[in-house]
Amino acid sequence: MKRFHRIETEARPSKMDRVAASTNALLSLIEWLSGDECHALDEPGLISTLGRRLLLLGLPVDRLTLHLMTLHPELIGRTLAWAPGDPVEIHDREHSARQTFASSPLRKVMDRRELLVVGLGESMHGRWQDIDIFAGRGLVQLMIAPLCNAHGPVSAAAFGTRRPGGFTPAEIQVLERILPALRNTCELRVMRQVELSLLDTYIGPLTAQRILAGRVRQGEIESIEAALLLCDLRGFTEISNRLPSNSVLELLNAYFDKVIPAITREGGEVLKFMGDAVLAFFPGYDPARSSASALMAAKSILHEIDRSEFEDTALNVGIALHHGKVSYGNIGSGRRLDFTLIGPDVNLVSRIQTACGDLRVPLLMSGRFRKQARAEAVSAGWHALKGFSQKVELFCLLES
Image (cartoon, rainbow, N blue to C red; front, side, top):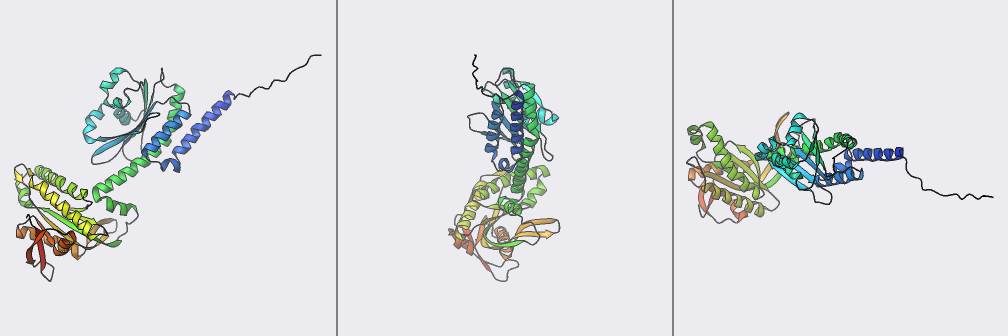
């Protein structure tokens, strides 16, 4: 009588099971790209997590880059680059790189809004500067895809592989399936960055934070203490009448390039450009500290301007400094509002600046400011200032 032995065999997943698992993993990645967990990540966290999840899908991605284009006065965009085991690289592209960028495959993809799969021969590295970010990694193929935003500039994603023969058609299809979700999450980041950079550029970071925090209603005003700095370019009317308009604009920009960095380096915020004048404030709970910062900024401006001239035109300024309480917030009408400073102390700093021209000194400060900043200054006398019933004692720097 024959005996039969039962042999246990390990069940192997069928091809259908493997396809289902792969599909579920892909759907999970797409869901992750669209979810709060992904949106909460910073840029390095986004690209590194995405890269690792692509590898878990079985995709031979050896280099991943996101090319996020933006609206910024100094930058055309930012490139994030990831490779397994390496730290994330961040490359900001300045406007001066536009000419180089114009000949790159990225520009071609963005302009045509079409996917591009390109082999990476050695000749590519010299011909396309943007390929340099992939150089030295043994990559044989790139898939570059446009990320077409509903608003704003077109961005791009690039996937590189070392595998001989490159990506298979099926792998390219998988990468294409994640692009809509990747585009959406990148668009949110780009628009957030555009929003912040434009607000910072046009109204300053402190004011931008208040607007983004919801302080957008007419009449929303808060009282703050701040050091005030008002800088005016002397003789601008005569200069603007003498020079052609394009030269006047160049002169103003050269002048502002001296003034603005000096203010922001010391923690000040430029609130207004009033023709050739700049109104800035230095907020803070410590009057001595904010006043000292404003004084340092004023001295830096004088130092920079003293060494400057434009087309044989010497630049001279008048700077007024004061510390006081101001009303800071929204004024205007209906749908056209402005964030500004108002109050008697703002009026006073304006009158002090006018006195700079009358007394022919580059800098004047109020007695209150002098005390708060502990400035080495001497009295320039008591002066009747327009709109003020009592005379005000003004002070100038010892070196003035």
